[in-house]
Image (cartoon, rainbow, N blue to C red; front, side, top):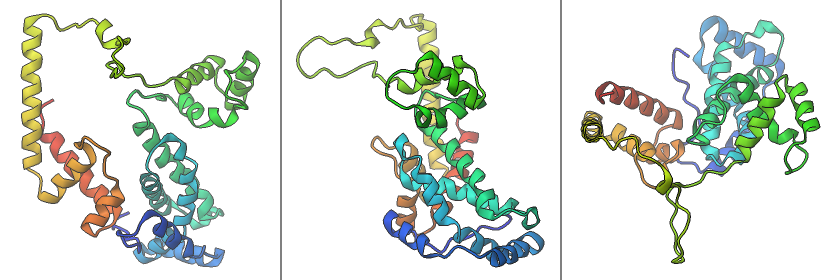
Length: 281
């Protein structure tokens, strides 16, 4: 949208309080929705757009709950869904003959899907369109925890319009576990350490020296990039990307600075863009 929509939710609220608050906003009648949508569509009335967004925040909360099984913060899932909702309001045409809630579901899910795929695992499990379809549907279609039979895989492939090979490959990816290549052994026994069995391609001294120089440049570039940021931007980047523990959520930082989570996301995006221009490739 050409102007930022300030959502009327205090940033200091806890997640439970936020959910209780958005649930108190009534859904709009068809007449009110059409009136506000036309005010935004025809006159770019930002207050009308804000009312459309606020009245549908409860929908985002409901959709975000379906993605909690991926181990990502509920607050961040909601925030990404809110971005999708605002995109939907921006594109909503009241003359299409559909309610905003039906139109917005696609955009809300699309933003949350993108967030889940980027953050669920370091090794991406879904990169193509058929793989994404399988990633978000395979678990719900399986009737047990057992491996799929050929018949079950064929049935899913037909339902999702993908190949049996794609179904079986995605099942393997989702059923796999992340394994540390350098596990800690606390019982004094000699454990299997995958790291010891990996051959290093960097035994050449020239390659080692080049790699060390590159790492020094990148480390120096990161320090320089952080120094070029203002204090608030630097704090947000460090809390979101450079902490050794759990990364701070958008809502936690919003509460710290007394602004909206959307404002924190905007500051973070600008800071990362500025840093990318500074750090050597």
